[in-house]
Image (tube, rainbow, N blue to C red; front, side, top):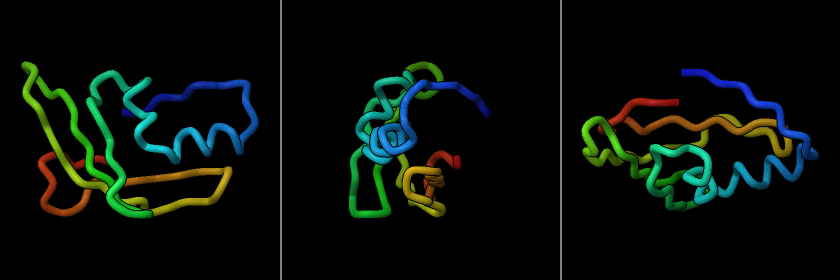
Length: 82
């Protein structure tokens, strides 16, 4: 799935918000929580089909401060995403 949204805020402010993964469930409604494990890894919990809970660990694999941040699930995760 891919989605685009235009937000009238400075890039540094948006990057800072997105980089704090615990903010993601505020607008990604299927997410229950995202917990930072270390500077590049995080643990995600979400509601799956039928209310089933899904969990996975992810890593940041591409990041340019105030420009972009990309993450992907780690090998062996229940859910493959990026």
